[in-house]
Image 1 (cartoon, rainbow, N blue to C red):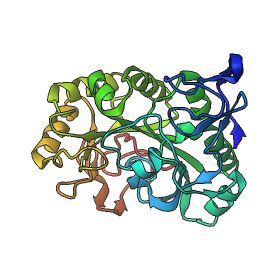
Image 2: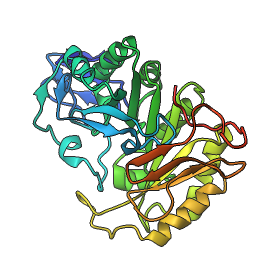
Image 3: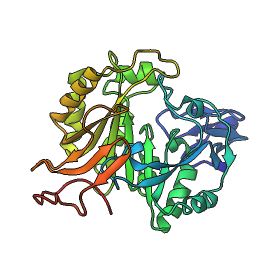
Image 4: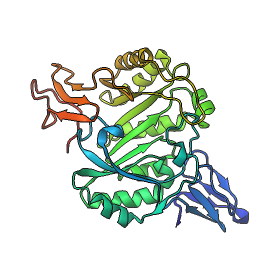
Length: 329
């Protein structure tokens, strides 16, 4: 364990965690809501520090990031814990429980990542990485010093100061937005919407930070076209080239709602495309997943599953010269 950042000591050996909007007040010997932070005799520690539950090399498209080094791989790692408790969590075995782990110091993880020369860098993912802030920061700082890229896959439920500290060392992020409705966040995720929107805007307002968004579509819960349109309009007002992934829901964990129908996926895509230039459907093999020039329609990236053909070499369409948002540097 390592002493946590962003907390205050209180009377009788209690502490208040200031990492996320929950602001947990934690008595000695107990953990916070996320399971990843623990009070030991009046000192808050990162209980997940160096505890790795998941490690692998993934296609960057799996994060998902479609406009960031397409066709390349990235070393990915996760720990345990999360500050949301979504009824439909896809990674609940490591997010909602203190999962079995192996201890791996930041230097050791970096060394292992460098054994993958085809990888562009490191992604903090699988469980919620912000609850493991101290470890992720150390890994990201070392990775950037090695000239490699840092990717964050997050729910965005974090306070502004720790978020800023983390984004200073992040090159690309995928923000998992659950809905554009506070009632959904309260009932399904046991959280609130406003902090996520605040985080999203902070990300989009950093022009150097490549940001893509994911929306797991659950029929009858967060698939209303008006809701998706309003959300997309809010995103487009800041950065219209932002990529949105509409992802297909499958029953998991505590939610047995039927899987999302193809018709609902395409309807959501159409609603978002009224405002955003690039909207893709994920967890779904049908349809065209390519990226096309918004001016002449030329194919810039051809995708069939994880078979990727990149047809651009710089920041401009090879056919008409129009700038695009695909990052390869």
